Amino acid sequence: MNTPTQSGERTAHLNTAGTGRMPDAVHAVLARATALEDRYGPAALRGSPPGAPHRRVHARLADLLGVPAGRTVLTTGAAQAFEAFTRTTVLRPSDRIWTTPHEGVAHLHALHALRERTRCRLEVVPLRPDGDLDLDWMRTHLDEDVALVSVVHLSAACGTVNPVEEIGRLLAPHRAQYTLDASHSVGLLPVDARRIGCRLLTADGWRFLRGPQDIGFAYLAPHPHDDPPG
Image (cartoon, rainbow, N blue to C red; front, side):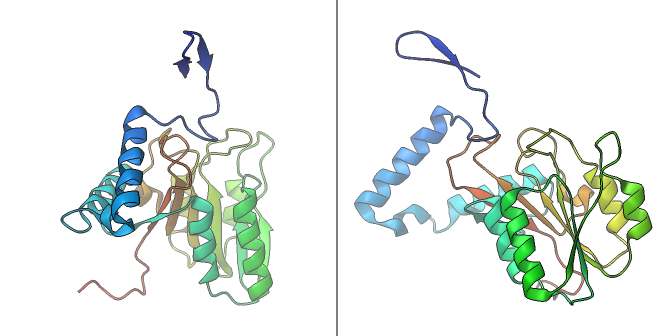
């Protein structure tokens, strides 16, 4: 991204995956929100009618992820949403968690904490010689003891795009809850959570969506044992 400076020189910003450059429209919204909160207090940010801006945000998130409205939540980041999910996950000592070599540090920390709390096993899905996930290994070793599978859509370290829809189809007949870290793919690649078939999708809004820092969101699919709406 080329950005002109005050002196007329142009600089290249190459790290949109780390912290995206916010557009002028985002800066303007943040400035208005800060001024409103400073003058009237945090309650003023909820808008009029109450909650209208939040409904628009969630409607746009639903469109972005290809999911029904009402299943998205705002967070301070993908890692925080994933950690909250793992804190409430109940596993048995005989259960197994699958992760991949592409997992981020924060997600790994949450998975290790879950393992320590439940005494379950944490296993890493191996890679093939070409660097892709070994789906044949997954098919061979998948059973009803696999309770949680955590996958990264796009690796921040090596750029690998994992076959997330194929993994979803593989896991669908089984009890394993499928979680997807889409932090580096949302805003860069098409993401359709329903086609992927994941139980939880987490992402950051400050990477390729170029939002402000400490903004994230998550989609939680209905669980088969959830009570029906209404």
